[in-house]
Length: 240
Image (tube, rainbow, N blue to C red):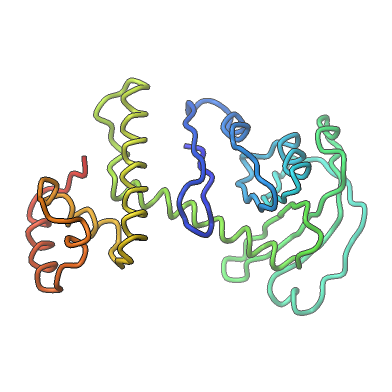
């Protein structure tokens, strides 16, 4: 599931499904690009031609650099003391030198960052030379939201086990789960409810044939909600 997650709404702007044995870049090329956007990617999606298309679209990217990527250092920027204390080790201007160097013919930026708590070091690349190196590392850190997104749908929407194993059956189950998720986010937005996905589904499931208005279900009294939730937890939770 190649997912473009909106960092403001935490809802997918775009998603496509490909075979697991195919390279991740296959899904990347289907993503529609927009202007004035920062795309944050895992290093599995390193495709120089696609990154250059982001630049041509007047947008930016931030991603980790693969260890076997070939490049040369054009310039070294001074790292101020405040950024050093935050973990920034290097800030450089580089240029790709590998076999596909012409796919990204312009310089870009490499930032080396150390996470003090774990001791791990990370190499980030970006076309953005305006933001501070620490800000770039923080932008990549926020990519963790997509991991939390996948965790949420796996834990609550039962897509780790499939009812059917044909391509069509698997896709139907995945897209159905995502429709449920989008309906939840939309309902949460309309009602301003503070319920989580699990609590939301536990209220909707036993009332699926109820004639109550949807808003009424989400504005139950605390006592009614507690009783309803206790009744729901006594039965097996199946959202489909």
